[in-house]
Length: 93
Image 1: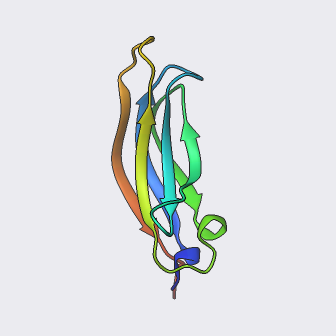
Image 2: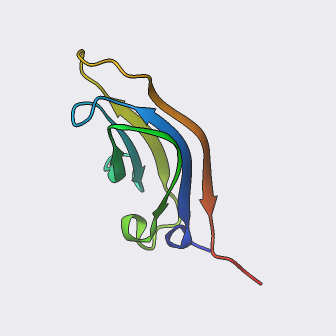
């Protein structure tokens, strides 16, 4: 199995100032250039989001994952809670 066969699943909730505060889920194969899997803004109760890694990682078999938040000084929300992260491979019989 290679990294391109993986799907990232994140169980999270968030309360961020819409269009001003963001959380980012990012991957990198060289620890220099980071690719966003998807920004998160606004608010949501507990939700499960999935991201296919094949487009971002190509044929690379090694990568790093980071979670990052960007916020300004106005508009206060509860933030970003991540309950679990899962890397899911292809199903086998």
